[in-house]
Image (tube, rainbow, N blue to C red):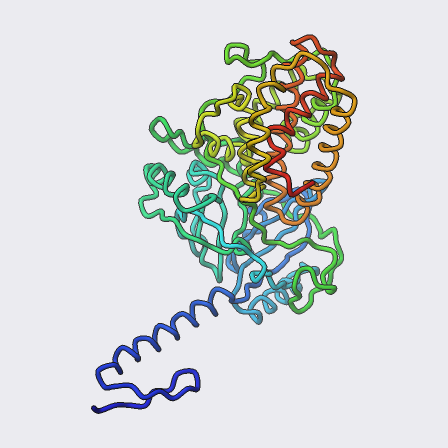
Length: 473
């Protein structure tokens, strides 16, 4: 039989003529796989323009021809501004040098750590290039936005979804908004640029997707105020690209981050009143000063929803701020949606809106590491603990407090590891503190004093989410 010698990866094989065509196809597939692998690991670069105060993307119109202008918010109304991304290191370095000549003396090129990123699921909405205007108001109706921008071509995506099937549930609704070519895709999260007020110029919350009714009309994009960027507030010289996290870069955080796990902002049903007696929830006592209310106020203030003093009283100001955050805080809206997709809890307390959100966040943080046997055990004890009318024993109260202290300490450390973790932690804080307030009122209604109610509420929270977060103890 006629044959041919074929060399694959340095090994000579003798194959028949009839098999040669199949072998050639196999070689082509190997080369294609090698190319895809190399492409997925391709380095990505960005250019840091500098740190400015009271600015937005429209203040840097002259930089838009260089790439997508984006920023990360700092303290005292400062924004660290970047332009990117680029596949070529020389191009990024050249742009940084050009910006230095234009007066941005701290411009510097950086290598983004794509090798440390994770594959996440998003829905791509549209493509943009050049100076073409972007309809941010219309796009934001689809949820939290991100931009994948490389060498002047920007892909607008929404997400992040926990998996493909979840993303597909929203795809038809997103297409009804007018994005007929929208599709689900997987992408390295380091390549995603979170879109914020800096990029859009939009100050007020937009009308979100309503999963039950027809999509609302697009909200017109307000005309942003034009101001000139102030001088750079740092003093980092221009240099060749360095990798974030190396000893050469110790002052600036990584410019590109995706939050994380997640991050869709499509909300489920209407907002929850803070004192919803009609829904079977215990009314919140605004006259009791407590740590849980103070921590909730602190979070709401950090997120820009609460302006009054942190006094620990859950009054009308805190009520209004919580309702506003419940409706508009992206990471909370995401978990409201995820919780609405789950089964109805057999426990009455498990169906409280704030607790359903907390449970969804805890499940996301657990990422499949929940202690199943402990979860079953806690479920069997839940009704007794919830219906208790007596204070915990001193030993039980001490154990509950120790659990909470350890959990918070370790979660705070976890939140600093990744911007995505920080967003998830924000939703956890809101769900936890609001749930604790509500549970404290439940136990105070049963006749306990504020201290005993606090300890009982902490023990109940441990019962609800302890098994999910067992790895943080």
